[in-house]
Length: 370
Image (cartoon, rainbow, N blue to C red):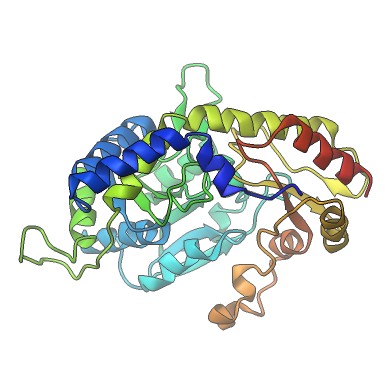
């Protein structure tokens, strides 16, 4: 059986160092707000290329806290509109509505499955204040057009990097320099859920930004709203990255680029060898770290059943789009045909750093035999 994401095997790639890091934390007797978290925050900020990293409890909190901090700064106000891709995991949109802001859903490009930047400007109204960009599946969704739109319309650019640790953007102009996702906008949210490219052994998340004031507010908001002990200028929450997770993440950060390289190698093999008239492999020229390797198939469910019979596990990301969920009943009548097509046709193939060449070959052979 080829598992979709065998976390035990993936953890074992760096198992000895992880065990040592965990033991060190346990023996230290300090489990929150300690040296391990500070060290990881410093290392991850340097890796992303920003001045500040604030560890929080999970990726959804990271997104929510960014928006909440901008509300406290007086830049966002209740009812303001935030443009967001219609094709995304629901957490992106939950963060917006949780802060009583208004999501404006924009369709993806069917060729890349990322937000269609040619549709963004027509979605802007006098109430638009931000774009929440999602680097979905691990592919960089940023573009010069999006940067230009934000500058001309004075919009915040907030990155949801939950699926794109280590992904980069290379400008089209020769003078431009490569930059990591998480450093391309005003602030960025990361998730360290175990299945992520940089995943812990439990929940975790982080906010990255160059804005010192924003970072200070977010750090307070994540600590009950406290600026110093027993002083609470904000209505905050308890959202902390614990020492154990930080220590594990700090070990795995050393191997993120090499682990992503393995994902890219498997993806390149898939792209070169999957040949089936009913199966489309989306892509594009942007960098992609393949948190998810998606294919589109008109007979998706039958393809999934076929692969299951061949001993290959797959997943669907995501079978019900956000605008069709019961929790957003007011959107249920919206027509978003590209997003809806993706929800009907998308199937995710196994793609992870512990995968062997033989396993990748078996996946391709089974797909082509469908």
